[in-house]
Length: 263
Image (cartoon, rainbow, N blue to C red; front, side):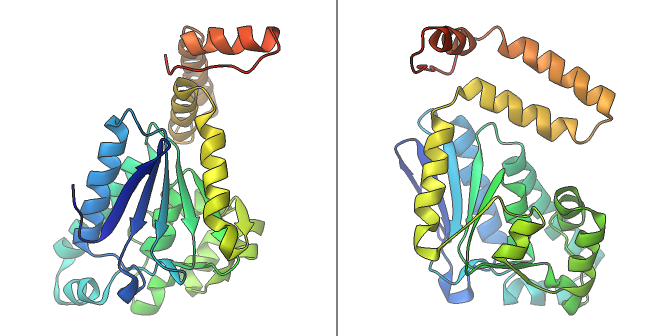
């Protein structure tokens, strides 16, 4: 399927999702959000894709936030307009966050507003040294509406999250790494190769175990410790019934590389 605002390609079981609006620093509008939703939904059902990498076109921006027309629409609208836009973003980001397949954000430049929120919904984040990350919505009389008020405190703690949200200040890649907002920082020219190396590493693991581990972490964070441990035990019991588990333990005992089949 052809998309107007996003490039989607598959190579060697990696799904490459590139937001392709460099003329506006890959800013988001409703159409782009909807195309991303369609792509990530298709990734869930695609047997030929095991991991996805999300990035922005060019070398200046991952996603710079909402585009000018969207901001004009919000300014001219009412509470229902704002709520509908936020809910469209929530729908996409929850789909990414609860993906059965790992999603890696390759942050190649500005990740501001909805861009920061989009990256936070991904399971792993790799940032170029050129990356600048923040939630500047407060400077427009707004606050993060695509999940930033919820995911940012969970990633970096309440105090730091409030500082970023209330001041609207940007941070660089090294500070993002220091506070736990990104997993790795690379030279700009090594960003995609690093993301691909990580993707290939994940592809070498047992797919069902990856899926259940993601489920345990995502759902467990929203429960009490006791409830999370119960979920973990249940999913651990389930993974122990898979062919991949038997292959993995047998390969370990036989001192050979496991050949996982996703069963």
